[in-house]
Image 1 (cartoon, rainbow, N blue to C red):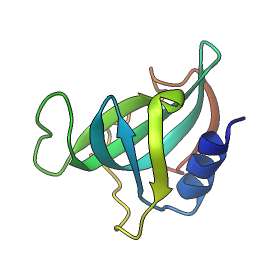
Image 2 (tube, one colour):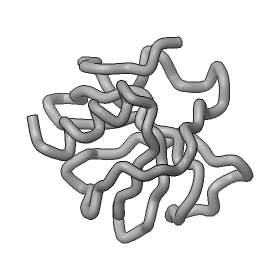
Image 3 (cartoon, rainbow, N blue to C red):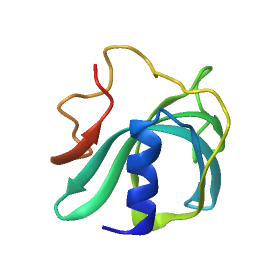
Image 4 (spheres, rainbow, N blue to C red):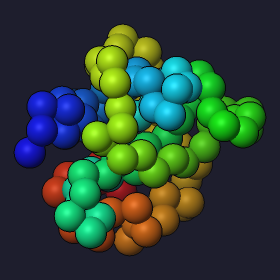
Length: 104
């Protein structure tokens, strides 16, 4: 388990927002499900601000991120975002072995 994975687990359990650079884009997000997909550390999160390869809808959208592709990962003081209700993809296509998840 990497340090980034542990930081995201802690943020998820404490409902803390995060910031990271991913694929060259600044992303502000809240982790909701963390675990493995085909042995790779992944996180399903609600990205509420920042940049993306396509424009974010107003309010944000669900994103599946590979943790090893993140840099500059930090917990922020930004408010927690629950995301769009009922559309978290549970069980998630993003994570097939769930380690932690925000209670429904």
